[in-house]
Length: 91
Image (cartoon, rainbow, N blue to C red; front, side, top):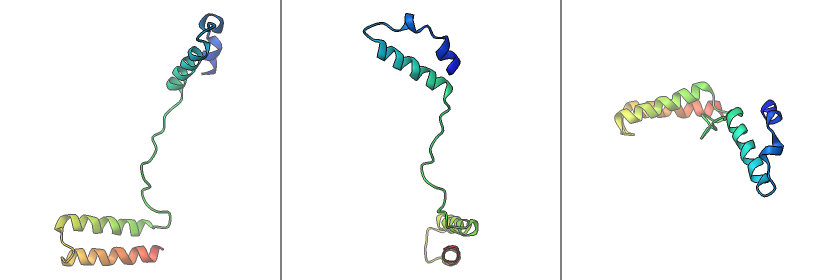
């Protein structure tokens, strides 16, 4: 960026009327080419206090529920109980 800004002939590029807009567009163009863009995470993956084991248990509970779609199913009850215990232990 620095080399390209130094290589620019500013006397020729900048006029009296639109010097600020020309400078701004030139700088934004250089910034778009050389500054990498990092995508922001939309949400955190897990809370800081939650352990890996607890997170795995919660994901398993969600997977079992998606399979059976019934909270009263024995597999759902067991997965919910294990996930709750893991979250409590993690806290």
